[in-house]
Length: 318
Ligand SMILES: [Zn+2]
Image 1 (cartoon, protein in one colour):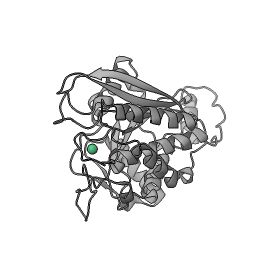
Image 2 (cartoon, protein in one colour):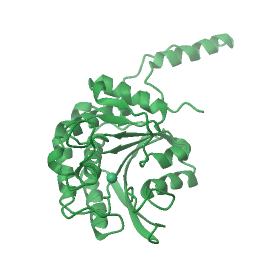
Image 3 (tube, rainbow, N blue to C red):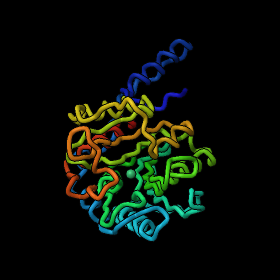
C-alpha cells in the first residue's frame, strides 16, 4: 500500500538525504536549502456561531428528504452559500435506483483549486431521514455537518492556497428509505466514489473526511473502526494539538456512512460522528426523532470540530 499521509516533516531532512545520495554517487552535493516557510490555515478562524447560523438557515427551509422539492431547495441553498463565500460550486444531478424505483439525487460540490498535488474531500450529507414527524428539523443529522462545512469553505477560501485541491461534497441520499443496501442509502457518496474511479482520479485522493452529527452540546466524537488507520492517527493528533483529545474516541464498531463507498473503492477515508445524541449519557434517543432540534446544538461544538479539521488539513502541508 502506498503511503497516503505525510506528516509535515522538516524540508532539510529530505534535502540532506538527497545530498547524501549525490555524494555516494560521486557528485558534488548541492547546498542544503533552508526550510521554506509553509503557509498554514489558522484554526482560530473557524467561527462556530457562523456555522450555527448556517445550520439554522438550512433547517428553516424545512424537510430535505432525498428526491423531494425540499431536497432540491436545500441543494440550491447550499450552492448559493458556497458561492457567497467565494467558492466555485455546482449541483451534480443524477438518477439512481431505490427500492421505490429510480429517483433523482443532487450532490452539491464546491471546489478550491490547489497547486496540483492531490485531492482532499470534506463531506457531509444534507438530506433528512424519510418518514419523520411534522416539524422534524434534522438539526444535528444532517444540519450540523452541513453548516460547519459551509463555514469551513469560508475559512479555507480566505486562507492560503494549499497543495491539494479541496472538494466540499454535500451528499444527497445518505439516509436509506428502508434498509441500507446496494440500492438504498449512501447514493450521493457512492455516485462520487464511482465517478472518481471512472475518471481515474481515485489515486489522487489523499483523504476523504466525512462529518456527521457533530453539533451536539454534549460532544464526544467517535472515529469508527472502518476508518483508514493513518487518517485516524492524524485526526487524534489534530485533536491533541487543539487540546481536545479527550473529546475523541476510537469506536470498536464500524459505522456505515458516506465515507464507506470511498473506503470500498480503495481511497483513504474517515468519519467523525457523535453517535450519542440523547437525553443522557450513552443515549442516542434524539436521533431520527422530532427532538433533533437546533437547541440541542452549540456553537462551541461546531468550533471544536472545525478547528480539529483545520489542524488535520494543515498536516497535509509540507
Ligand atoms: Zn440520519
